[in-house]
Length: 378
Image (cartoon, rainbow, N blue to C red; front, side):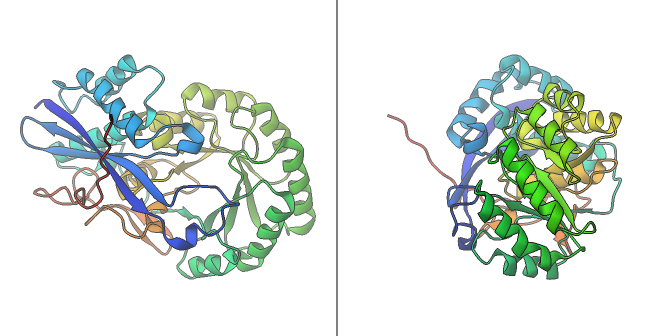
């Protein structure tokens, strides 16, 4: 069997209104535009993947990913689709440092395709199932009364939360204070600053919270400072009892090694969509495990196709603290019509169908027609 073509379709999904009300939080467009990748073979089997985008953090967009697919395709057409390592090697030869989103979408599609060819779920390609399910974090709605949404999510069984911070010290402290009574000691709250704080600001906020927050309440400081400020992360980590999570600055194994060498984080967030694919993310997981560094298998602005790939990697990983596969639930409607990751009582799981487990043998299980975004260039 040979790969005959690789195509990409930009698709859109609108965020639910309650996630757009307060722009002091992590700013995003009302509509998320990602790219669905399809890998075609000479025997008619098609693998699907998704390239997710976060332009404000990583600079990639759907048009750049579509161009990236065209750039990478010549190195992949003609390959046996089961040659996953060779395919990843060829992508890096054609684009050594860039087109990370395109690489991730293609690699997800390769894993879906390989699973379909072999008749096994994707997690079997990754070493087999380790967990029946893995808890997933979710982000409460970003409006002034975010505590009420936190309560709703708690009632649904979620116990891990990512709360976006604004960069305004008093405002952020007030938000945290409003949420802690809701979760008590039953949940973990990650304060995701997305690089919005300075080192001194993070130390001030951590100091205030250490005085106010009981020991039994679980708080994580997620990416408080600039992505490449590993020494700043290390300084914060040494000064506070709260675990520090490194996130935005980990794009390669070399980045992860620098975090570990600097002793800059208690936890690392590893994302298929940010590091260039399933295979590379699993490699980073192995590195973290070898150094006894805690990790989460996380998402970034993903629809259900990519969220499902993350869930497969999470259930196949040895000991993730938790995962992040709930982003698709923040949209008005996702593009997946059937199958994929399921979340019950805050626990993420995948089915045992071949590949990603989306759709069926005769249908891809995704709605491309009504969600497609067309780009025209002069």
